[in-house]
Length: 262
Image: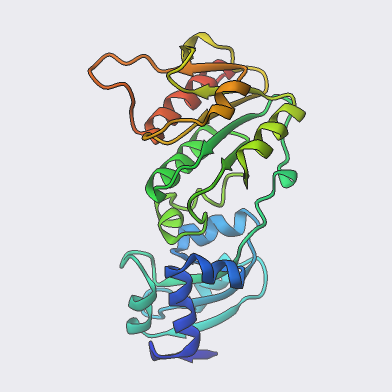
């Protein structure tokens, strides 16, 4: 089995770039996954693994082989190398190099009464990760990111989503293309915005529905407001007029899930 003991190794340097640079991930079509649970979920989500790097003091070759569905190159690494690549010390001593997916709207497989979350131009990886966790918890049918501002395979998204990046159907495209896609699929659009809105809990989400959220700073663009079946708002009881986008998404999604039956 191949072993790598130096952080100066050229392959290790290329993996550091994958962690740090979206350009490197885009160029290679690969990204790093850290942690046993996250790798298990990536396999379940049909992500193709190219290489497994592991620290033998924390996880054995036999344990790794039990995880895998197909043959993958295994590389034994030292603690120094592991600490160079890993963000956390509690990820069981295992990392994987995986291939990215195309994330095309045309690849989404939706039921007739699909429940979809659309995020427009959300930048903070922590918010995206939290929203992906909520989408997994609510078992919605797809997540669409319109006008993406952050590379979806950013390690902070992989980490903050605790692997839910891999358990959701996800696509990315422009706002204009996403709106057209939803209309073509006859999916009602509910835009979360302050303007011309009805309270969110008064709407019917039991038929095909897309809940659309934007940034906390600027909200949804005019295109969503103009094309929404209905704009919706969460009634505020305090002094502020908005809340964290991941919290707002959770409220909307679980109202839709409540209407459809838990």
